[in-house]
Amino acid sequence: MLPLTLNKARRVVVCTGMAFALLGLAACSDGPDAQSLGPVGLNGAARQAGLQVGVALNVSAVAETASEQRRSAVREFTSVTAENAMKWASLAPAPGRYEFGPADQLVNAALANGQRVRGHTLFWHRLNGLPGWLEAELGQASDRAGRLRELMANHIDTVVGRYAGQVAQWDVINEPLSIVGADLDTDNVFSQLLGEQYIDLALLHAHAADPSAELYINETFTEFVPTKFDALLALAQRVLDRGAPLHGLGLQGHFFFQPPDAGLLQEQLQRIAAMGLKVEITELDIPLPLFNAEPDPLAAQAGAYADVFNACLAVPLCSGITVWGLDDANTWLDSFELTQASAPNRPLLFDDQLRAKPAYDSVVAALLGVMR
Ligand code: G3I
Image (cartoon, rainbow, N blue to C red; front, side, top):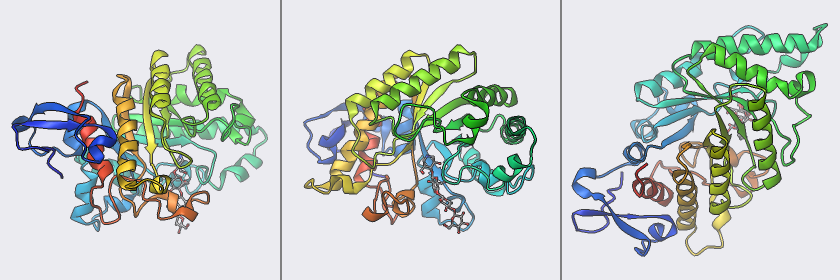
């Protein structure tokens, strides 16, 4: 990847934010010695900064048919999340029947690359997160709540048990709150049948299945809905007060309504850390059309990426950032109903030819600008 030596001196010039993206050097400072760094890519910069930098992948990215260029882009990251392969619907085509092929392939490839694995996600009630058979299965049960509890326990034992010691973090619960509101989502079979305690049950069981895994609640749109963010913290506090093993909160970071507000984001990350919880930005994407009015949209996007990384790097308990896709040709935003009209959304670090974008450079620069 790009050497980060921006001048001919023996010291690397480290720049942050928009200034770097625009190659204005005003916000640049002397960094570590150039000889000790050499050309540093994303992976090296992430490891140096002590931050996990992850990518969400579908199995095609690691399949034998994937090009060497794609595989080497995958190796730029220190952490991998299965974009879809570990969802309940993907793993279990029928009650009690599991197909682990794609999930195993992703986990094995990541471990072979020395990458961390985030497990995504055990329980998610939206889109195609739930298996199609679940409703009929519960419909046949005389005790629907009891049957759901049993199915959840079996799912956790089977999946968390299988990947015990391999999956470092699980998004145990995904999106428990209503989409932009401050309440628990009521359009959710888990909360309907088991109440808020479905979260505790899942956390307790997952902890028993793999005591070494860090357990997360992962939420969306909190970054620009402050009441929802407050509700997430209140929920997390209730879960902790009831004694359930919650270790972290994931903020998804789908910034398709507006660019990140760096100050607000850092404050949110700090508030989570102040509760003694870890925090990760778990599904980051920042669409390019947000910056269409800017003179250089790619540079503005790079600045927004740097803002997010700098916010996380400023908070020691912010342990990772995962981008939601490897390259601009593989983004869910181009087929999602709210964002497909603005396709191509080009929201990621690599373009559709797998070339590193200015956002890639600004992220590397942000990582090299800190020692944690
Ligand atoms: O696998 C089928 C394939 O057999 C079929 O031919 C094709 C036809 O549409 O669909 C394929 O399934 C798609 C699946 O992704 C795998 O590619 C689904 O239609 C599609 O809806 C699904 O979208 C995923 C979505 O979650 C729903 O599960 C996106 O790729 C994925 O990026 C998105 O990720 C979620 C996170 O898990 C949670 N947070 C929000 C985020 C964005 O919605």
